[in-house]
Amino acid sequence: MTTASEPAWRLPPRAVLLAAILLLLAAEVGGASMARYKLELGRWARTEMLARPAVHGLVGVRDVDERILDEALFRFDAGLRLFHMHAEGMALVVIATTTVAVTLAQGATTRRALVLLLTVGGIGYPLGYLLWSVLIPVLGVERGKTVAEWLLWLPFGAATIAALVWLSALIAVRMIRR
Amino acid sequence: MTVTRAVLTLAMVAAMAMPAAAHHTGVYAPKDNAITTNFRDVKFSVQAGKFDVALRRFDEGPLRAEMRARAEALPPGLESRTRAALQARDAAGAEQGLMVFFIALAQDLARQADRQLAAGPAAPVPIAQRFLEAIWRYYNLVDFAVAQRHPATSTAMRLAYDDADSAVRAAPAADAARLRRTFQRISEILEAPLAVRGARRP
Image (cartoon, rainbow over all chains, first blue to last red; front, side, top):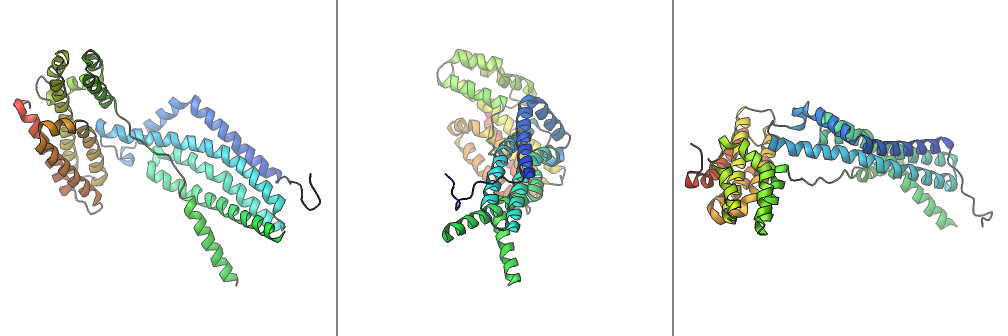
């Protein structure tokens, strides 16, 4: 039962819902593609790595290089898997948290800022894993990670965390005032 | 007041960025390669007294193929001696053959590392580190057998590995000459078990 003092849940803007659904779609397509093109993806990554021996520190000795290639291929695959999982999870997180924000945040500016941070952060963060995977064969595991970190993980992850802390504080303040 | 608020906001965003940097990227557990997997199959079959299984695994596996492919660099008759030991249900003889093979592989890697470092690579440390890992991966498989037959070699090898590891970790101060010396030392140490019974090809 909803009373006058307990407002009903409000829907976030449609653009936010669309962005979240598109992220969910990307996660599912990504997951399906990983399974369907596993061999092709692995072969592509390996070919790209072998074409850049200096980037990956290959020394031309099988006993040494096979471990390096194996680790890089493991990270490449892990990046794709983590993109799939994070994109699925963050799409739902975006929908849930923006719903809470539009329902509980009172000022229009606060609401807009929260929705923007939660949406942009939630959509951008999982893409970091996809970028990392793509960069591994070209730049190597560590350099690829650094680029993904600075371009996507840090800014978008920080945006999501900042918005969640802000939203938590808002809810706590409302509970105290009640 | 505005400045204070801005500073506080910046501090909060910076604090947020720190946990954001702690994203997890998976944990890589190094796997055995085909040769070491085959070695473990043979070794465990021998330990279980199943010499027929060990012989079949040896005959069909990449370990024997690798012994044949590297025959020129290995002690003469190593592959046939190892096979004969398995056939004769001689666990100690089979272990000796396998031990010599992996020591030869490790020594070959140490020599290759020395050669590559002598060529003056732009980044000697990562090369040294990778060779060292590969050497230890092979040597560690047979360290127990080495320690039983050649305890001095086992101790010396462990010290040499620690020394090489320290040299690699001293990067970027590590110099190629110091790294080369550590690989030369490893190669010399591994010569002793290979020299037994005139095992080494002249």
